[in-house]
Image (cartoon, rainbow, N blue to C red):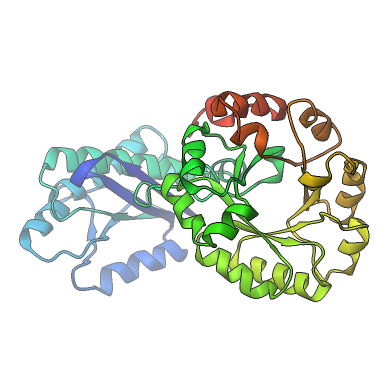
Length: 393
């Protein structure tokens, strides 16, 4: 048996972060335990957890400092409140039957603790490490988190030190609302972004006119206003696919758009490079006569394909939403977006036809009430998940 747990508890310099392994003495955890006691590392000397001198907790538990111990003041925090907290947490977990009583002689525990060099409050060091150890232990023995929990939170979570999230577009969360920021005025665009409500359903697009005026570096300016949104660079690449993917990637884009009118060789390099770098490859089929045939020419499918009716031909061209189901048959994981004159009347129809993403520009960016317009579209696509989220450990 080999289980792993982790927990972060507390705040300030006294914050506790615990990584924990628990398993059998005769297994890999027991081997790591023995190595820890016999192969010492300067500044990271492991020690047995004791409730008080001469009274170790059981299962025997090894405490390993994560931060290099450089002075006696640092050592006192490890050999004092941190050691006692871990030992008491283990002993209480046995009493509370989190750890089965019949396993205390068969199992061992390794607890890696973080003690900030500037932590000064021994009471809080103890309290936070006690709580973190118990929580990490409980999580380890219950195999927390499960895969569904990870899938749900991985694109919503904000790492406390990084300070922003890096979202993806999970298929189970479709449909999405993509807002095309086409106005070639970055100051107006920033004001629009500031009025957009936060939602897991929203994608921001740095539109082609905006990029043509300011260059791909405009993506960084958008990032100054919103660090956590999914941002697409609509380059409509026709040549040097690999180079243009790199341009968008270096500016911080989560996805990049190529024109479906590009040669298949260009699109193949475009898609390959986007996937190599870990961003989304999008192909816009504006004026492409047969999008289904185009996909069959490619070595790999894009992450998203756009059925796009151009603005200047909206009065003449018909929407091709009837192709959505056929396109998805080529690869069920590929999402299909629709663009071109999408408004409050047409959006519900596009969703009924199976669109994964509806791309809206003027109906939002030129609205007198940007926030209200966005929320109206969110009503069509299923609402704002952030408002419904319930955090469950």
